[in-house]
Length: 165
Image 1 (cartoon, rainbow, N blue to C red):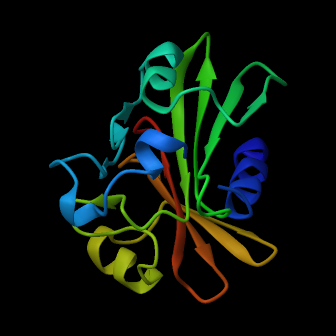
Image 2: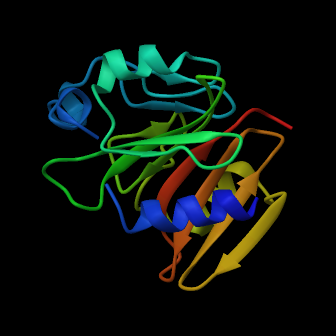
């Protein structure tokens, strides 16, 4: 949990490569290209996907953190220094997906970057936990398999997808 918080902190200050980030605006996107499905996927990346398949989509990662039992791979946007997507892997299999500052990615209810936390709560109900950190919070809906990074203004700046618990 502490590692997730640290990674989310890095991602809120961080940034997806050419194929995904250089893609046309969401209005011209293929259906589902930027759809966030709690507990399952974020756009084309799914929980359980092999790392090689993720690299086939996004190319080589911008950053690799091989410390600990799991490994983190991050892809930063070349045109927006805040936008990024990262995956945590265990034995080269995606176990968690994290997104920062990319308004194209949305749930089927329209929740995503810039959404007010009060709207998230209205749509999804009471969160299972809240982790308050300096300047932001991580709001978790564990039974749904989704979490949101909320900034000091009360708006979503990141999304986390994990298996449902």
